[in-house]
Image (cartoon, rainbow, N blue to C red; front, side, top):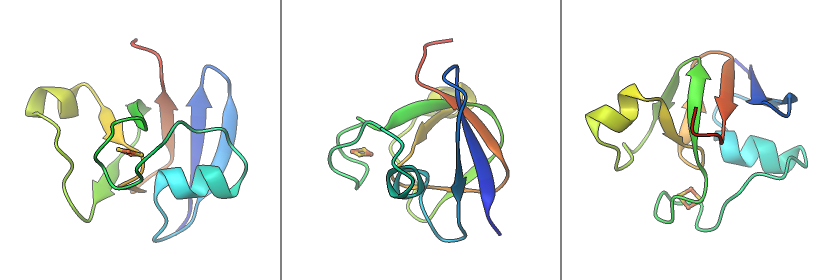
Length: 90
Ligand code: FES
């Protein structure tokens, strides 16, 4: 099942297909999404989920606190629902 991701506050939307990562979906749809390694090592793709759920095949290195704050590794994350994400601190 595919899900819609909204990048806030730019209000850019893209669709993540089943099995795709958030980063791959963004890049496939020409969304300028920060990234480097694509394997969960550089943290360039780190952003925060303000609404929605993701899952990982391989759990990224996030503390419980960071997870609760909504931090997500976009290059590893699969969507479990529609998402609203931001690169801002708040
Ligand atoms: S692109 Fe390097 S951690 Fe995601």
